[in-house]
Length: 212
Image (cartoon, rainbow, N blue to C red; front, side, top):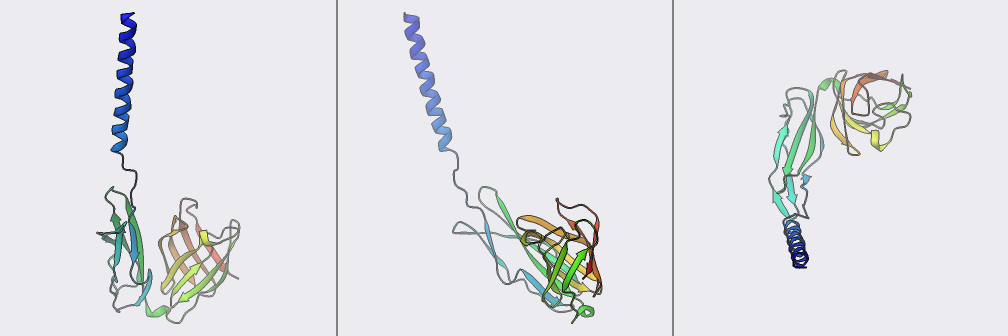
């Protein structure tokens, strides 16, 4: 009988210790974290003429109501060389979670001034989908169907620059949360454009789009 009583008391002590141990662990768990929010000052997409000037307007990052540091990386904008430059801004909160935002600068060569590649283009393979290219401003465009799939839309819309002669620049950008960019991007005005789409849902083929 004594052994039975001792067993019950001992079990009760173990259960009590386990209860308070779990309670203590729970108290040390952080239940709330404020992810960094980066706000760009000025425009995200910018154009500047070759030999012009560009000054980064800066950003602000916050963790909740607290302003936190921002690390600036990516490309150094060289306005002497036509091209598309991507500036990155990264901020980390107190729990180590990071957020990255992007700014783009297209340095535009005089050779494309006044030219317009807007229009509808059909891909010459696959689903042979139609891409509608819209001119937003001088040398700056968007396509609503980056890969020429059966039907384009917001999840396949990318922005790009016609920065020199037959050269297009489609920098890395988030489209509905998915990263897109294009390589080997060229245009023959009034005829066609081509590029390789860089995204996990697309292959590595050079895609050709013929103007309708």
